[in-house]
Structures are given as structure tokens and as C-alpha cells.
Length: 203
Image (cartoon, rainbow, N blue to C red; front, side, top):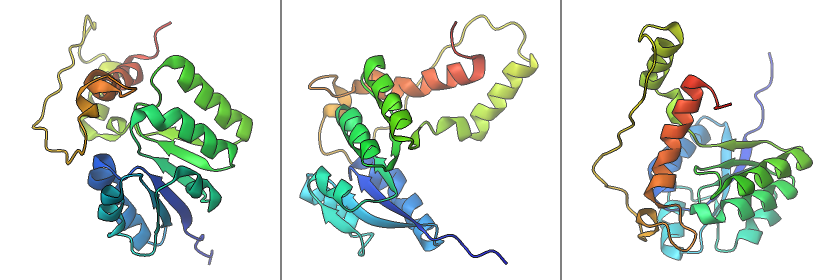
């Protein structure tokens, strides 16, 4: 009988809305199953840090990003505001840590390519949180397109809209200023990812 592998030691960077709504339930489940251990959570906002950290009593609460690297987790989840993604991701990779980065990966192509190059150079894994590929509906649409059931494809219109109920602590999500992504870059990445997944990357 094979021994169960030791849990992966994980640190979470950014304890805002996406961490609270999506990562916290997933991390709780995976920790309960013995697949990972959240060793640290980081956020410069002590209120956000404590709100998230209360769900993980054994995790260290860190207010400075270098402290995350100093404890050498096996995996860092970057869930901070998008303007910090390149700097934090590259620093973690250079420290020999695998990274899962929330979308949007980077504010522009050049920064994204720098992040990928850093992963290759360090020999570490870099993944991005594009989750909609895993939805049953998007997989079904992909099959319809690839099977030709829809006939010749002339155009695709993307519509987004739900009640905004996120527990945000700033308005950066709504405006592309000061390095923030803004709604189009933050939500539009989902549409672009699905289009390239269904149809292939443009030549």
C-alpha cells in the first residue's frame, strides 16, 4: 500500500474578496482532506488578514510580502490586486517556489512574458486561475463548436452581468487607475480565454 504524500505547504498572498469567496472554501476542504496545509496568509490590510486568518488558526499572519518568501512554502497563491502580480510572482519563482496566480496574470503582454520566462529560468511551475474552462456549460459549448454542430461560425458575442455582491474594500475593481486592472481587463480575460480555448489562438 502506497503511503499518502505529505500535504503541500501553501502560502496565500492577498486576503481580499477573491480569497474570501473562492480560495478560503477550497483551502479549507483541501486542508481537511490532508492534501495541503496553509502555513501563512499575507495582506498589508490587518482587517482583511484577520478576517481570512480566523478560518486558519495555525497559519501565520504576515503583513510584509518578503516574510512569505522567508518561510519557504512549496506553493504561493497570488490573490493580490493585479498590479502586484508580476513583482510578487517573479520574486516567488526566483525563491524556488511554485506559483498559482489569479487572473489577470499581468497588466500587459511584456509583463506576462517576463513572468513566464522567470518560471522557465527557475524551473518552477506557474499556473493561472482561469476557471471557466472547467464549467460544464463551457465544455459543452466547446464540443458543439469542435463537432461542427453549430455550423459555420460567423461571430461570437460575450455578455457579462451579475449582481455585484463582492465584499470589496476598495474601488480599484471598478476603475483602471493606479495600476488597477479595471472591469474590462479583470472580467474580459475570461471571455478571451474561452474564445482562444474554443477556437485556437489567432495566427
